[in-house]
Image (tube, helix red, strand yellow):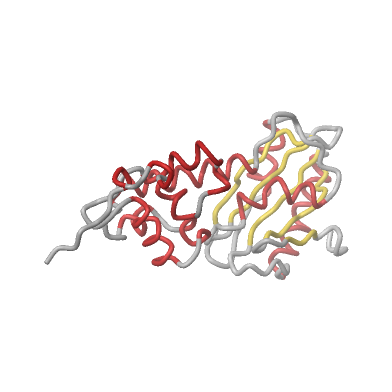
Length: 228
């Protein structure tokens, strides 16, 4: 016998996620309720709130949902490609908001540089190499992705790294890459690449100020550790 499911529109008005958000603010809603608003409609298997709970149950955490692919999200019963795409779009907007600023931010300390890229890089399951291009006043002109490596290695060529600095008329750069393992400890390959970039920068007149390694909610500055 098929079970009956309560639709969101059948709930009292003060229990519906969208109405609760308007009345009390987004912070008052639970994670399944927020997911339900993004998902918009449920399926024959249950309401949008039910789908939100299923997502959390399947993946275990909000961070895992953010890292899931469209195919993985679509595999949850009742989701489908359209709802999965809505979820991915919402997380991408949040990521971009966390790394967007209206003005050129001054980056004169490692923590300021890390703050610019942490949310963008911490969830990657492969190594991504990024370049922060700075002007003569250490203000960030641009943040550009240079290369994507494997699960535990990344090869960034100095030509690609300094191309971004030259194209944006940068005076200096800070390079960064993530460790999907979550441990930001530099490898021998990281140290060798850093030394190579510093030498190339001297030749080109573009200083390499630092190399940041991004882990899971933590980071390491090779300059602070005396490795640059």
